[in-house]
Image: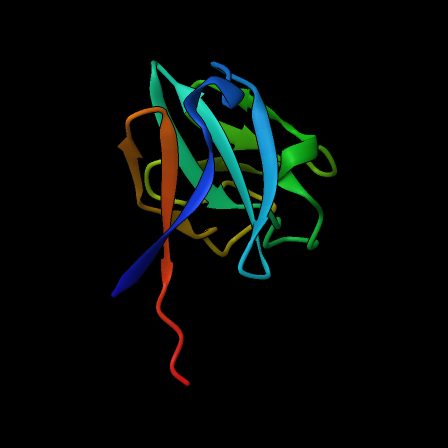
Length: 106
């Protein structure tokens, strides 16, 4: 189950740009693709580098270190990465972007 937390204002997320955030101690990045806001884990599963320093190509984020691409709908990687990145649900409330993070057990 996800707990939705406020992430950013809609005007802060530009088409094809990447906005890095830390939400509840989790590195997240936001982007907008074809008008739709996407939220994804901001850590490359190949070498733990920040994906937010990369760029958007088609519907993927490209890691700046070794060129691995991650599909921003599924998280699926291309070589050299083999492990998907997390993709988080997004909801828009007025001009606010809310991201669903996994509920933690206390």
